[in-house]
Length: 136
Image (cartoon, rainbow, N blue to C red; front, side):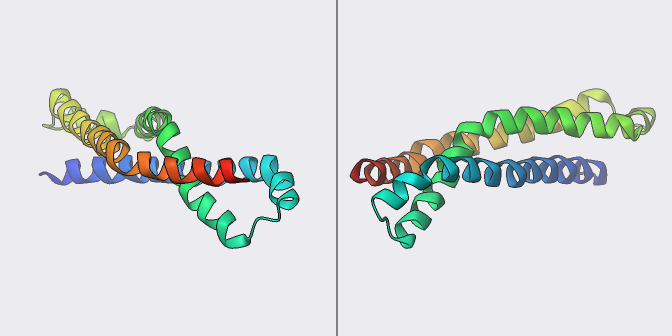
């Protein structure tokens, strides 16, 4: 793996995880604002609320994962283009096909990670969260 590949991977993944880190707390705040009355009416203990929001992070993240991938690609590519890094990469010996093949490989890797987590982990967490909501 070349240095430029590591640089591109690092920039893309950092953009992706920053977007995740920015949007998940907003989703938590909106959901908490909607459900705070139910929590107070039913006198739900704080540990149950905390467990609900730990599961909610996984649920909300899995629902918006494709959107985060898309936005990260757009933001990452536009940031590279605005810094004229793509021009510098393409003017060197590095070809566009190499750039696209490496980035598409990492997009596929993130997709399969999400797919397998969706099959194994998210389903159990969603069941636990729904049981908690139905018990209120």
